[in-house]
Length: 200
Image 1: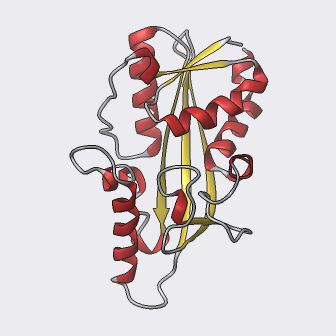
Image 2: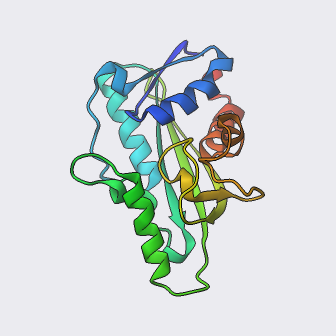
Image 3: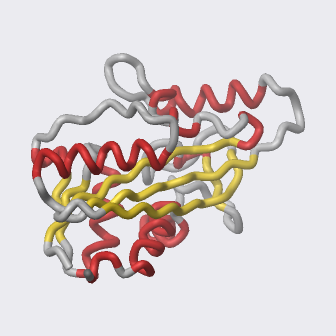
């Protein structure tokens, strides 16, 4: 089992979530942002493709065991959009504005008229490239519904408009530990643990 994993992200929220998951295993995470690595352009048309792209690129630059995540919000009534373009909907040209992204989702749902389904799910794909180049991919999902206006200040991305099944609070209102227990990233991580690939 590696003592350290390179996490191929510059997103501080993701770093915090993954650090909490790996801490009990005695594995320290170092982010691509901390290492000063460039962010690759996500050119693939699937979560798996983009996760592997990021993991392979960081591994090629460092030779370290590397974990990358690609995740997004898929809205049923929008044909799965924004999907792999989840972060693109927040792009302003001067950074990311998640309120802009959430407002776009709401506008596109409203344009379909009253009674439109508000069902949605988050998807997370983890791509793990070990030091020897061996690759593994794992997926997790969190199902729920969208609400408007946004509620809560915990979390990041679309969390303020996503209410997970069985709950009345959004991901951004739930305490960190409660969201962790329900999140798509946690479910992908559980699949990784079940596969036993970090023990090889």
